[in-house]
Amino acid sequence: MVLIITKNKFCTLMSLSCLIFGILCGICLNQQPTNSNLGNNNHLLKHQKISNLDEFILILTNNLEVCLKLLLGSLTFGLLTFYTLFFNGLSIPILLSNVKIIDIVAYVIPHAIFEFSGFIIVGAAGFKIPYEIVQYLRDKKEKPITEEDIRKFLKLALISIILIIIAAFVEVYITPEIANYLLT
Image 1: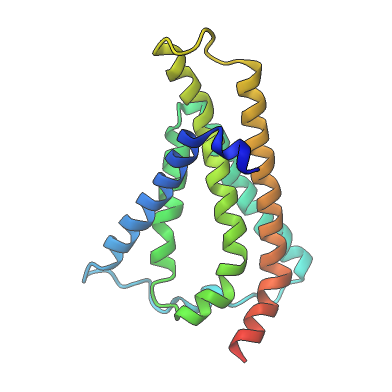
Image 2 (image 1 turned 180 degrees about the horizontal axis):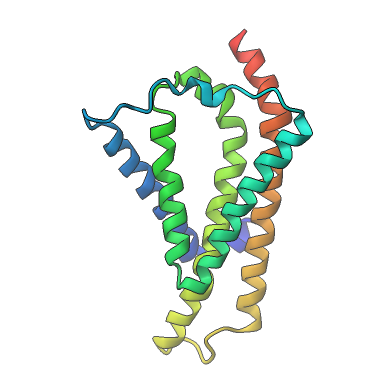
């Protein structure tokens, strides 16, 4: 996995930069005195009374939709990828603004490690095709998109989907146990 990411360093850095830029803007927006901080957001961390399987499917479906938008960013020359990463990053500090640090550690960090990694990698995939086309236009390549480029794109997509599945599993089945342990 590390090898495929290092071979796509520029795209991975672009993806990470978009997410971080969104987070920083979210922090700045959240510091404005007119912002109500969306009230008390601790309810966002409480799990609803639905079955674990239903919750897993709901979370997985939502995150796979985000992955699809990031991948489809290739068709919009990276604009949809940028937009999706930026606005997902933007929402993080706003949603967590009134949440205690211990609650973030307990309810968010365990699965966020996999989820953010998956989103950054799939974001790199969303930037991969536009990056290769730019390289072609700069006369750095003979063909705009090669079979190898498509293989790398698909590998990035597959790795990210695996990470997103792991993240959903951790969020539903492991995070509550960690939170229960840390908060009792």
